[in-house]
Image (cartoon, rainbow, N blue to C red; front, side, top):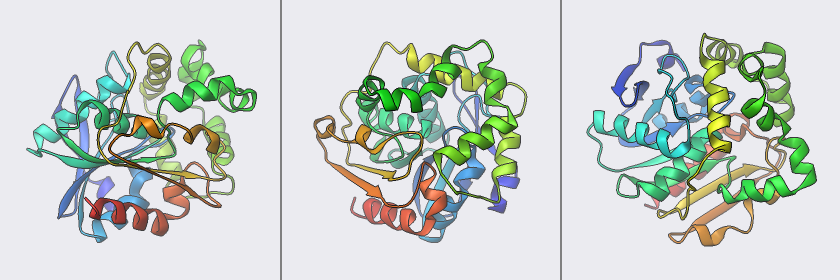
Length: 276
């Protein structure tokens, strides 16, 4: 999407948060994850804009050109996203988040329900699912990267290593090839981004607060072939969604389901958002 080649706007939160304001119509906040950048959300954003949505797409704190911050816990970053909404004078919007962006989206739905109307989480379960994940031996093997990024002295260097990023990309979404991957990697290899990624994982493992109940209607989509988070992590937490949870597994896709099947994923999201 050529729009991401243009200069972003900035909102002042704990640091300056860069964001792109794309399209016209109903505003929706779209949050990327790791290893990714706003550009990596372009297949989904393009379809949302064509469906009549105005996509607000921030670069999460620490991902250039957004500034780094001291605390990358989801609850703190959720506050930064509220600052973006304030800068645009948007009172209440739906939010779509992938990977770490999904964690932030769920926190917004739990702790800022007055500002968020609906949540779509892509490839991320309720945080309670991560607790179950750490008890499962197979999941422990799959999630070893998270411990390394959180605690290894070489975490920042690893998070920006080209070969490692390619390996993660291939293992989490087997067979996925996307034209903009080299440009996404370029963002991840900018000075300071590796340190920020280390901070995201470190602060998540050290979090003293939990997301709790998500108080707005939620759609959770995950791929059957996700090499990062297994389908079992998504099940059994319906009680954490008192406003309703639609949990859907998408066959034949991995962690970047919105890139692998953008038409299908966008259609499911638009259906869910339209119901509100």
